[in-house]
Amino acid sequence: MEYSAMLEKIKSQYDSKIPFSIYSLPDSDTITCYFQIKNEIMEGNCFLEQDMLFAPFDSEKPLYCIPANKAEVVSIPFPKNSITQQEVSIDEKEEDLIKHLKLVKAARDAIKNKKANKIVVSRKKDIVIQPLDFSILLNRLFNLFSNTYRYLWYHPDTGLWCGATPETLVKTEGLSFTTMALAGTQKVNSKRPPDWTSKEITEQQYVTDAITTSLQRVTSVVKISKTYTQLAGSLAHLRTDISGVLKNGKATLATISNALHPTPAVCGTPTKFAKSFIAFNEGYDREFYTGFTGPINPGSGDSQLFVNLRCLKIEETTATLYVGGGITIDSEPEKEWEETKNKMQTMLQVLQPFL
Ligand SMILES: C=C(O[C@@H]1C=C(C(=O)O)C=C[C@H]1O)C(=O)O
Image 1 (tube, helix red, strand yellow):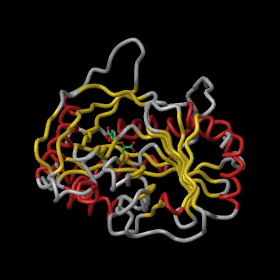
Image 2: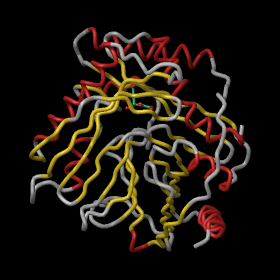
Image 3: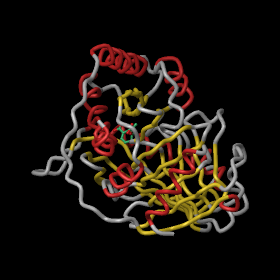
């Protein structure tokens, strides 16, 4: 399939409300498209066959998939273009600032009261956009942030989502797996490497510890790398790689993703408290933000799932952007607000021609 035919196909699937998904793996020049053939709703048991998966933050809610055997699956190179980035400024409402500062303070108070060590709090931001043009959107999505997992997903039940996430939930190859603990955020400064503070180091260590503990149930041989800096757009994060072998016969992709999700990178620790704090205090439904998505193939064992961060949802002429950050005892509310603004830049860069 030619790239221009693919663009036509996306438009016709979208106009006829038939599910499709397009993705490019980190550092790849190829996009893979899943165009569902018939307009059936595929939700529920999505971990059994080769498919594209789209799972919400709340594991009680349905996850969606486009099975390969019900879709036209094509992989093609995407046209490369260099795009210059300029910071995009948008109006933020005073009430949103006040609400977020209050949320961060409430999370910090719960931590001070020893209810949790870390809680990830987030917000969403609605932005009015020009009518969508898939050609422009995909050109920016796939050419910017090439070291991230970039995707576009559409399903009539979930709506249209896209994202460029730096975070792997889990990658499996046969019985081997790798995952990562990603946390701590600084704006990249071209003059000097990030100087990580003890707040960020502690916040990221919580993630490594929690992931290693939850994996003990379903894996054997866990290897933990040194912690290093990962760049994602104009941001830097702290990252530790965790790899190992799945317990033969016991661990499936479903068990390992259930063991991992939601990690303290997007929820907090302890998970139960952080989850209920988020449900009671965030004041909105995260839907698929901080859920997970990616191409899976349980038969061959080669699957890649990514945490749905730096993402947005488009409904007609409104784009909703989702951003959050990890709160610990040392968090400063104003800095956390700035961090959400910095994280928003990723999707604002993609949307720039539509603003
Ligand atoms: C929650 C987000 O990102 C997560 C939180 C981070 C942090 O608190 O520093 C860093 C990377 C991600 O694990 C987001 O991008 O919305």
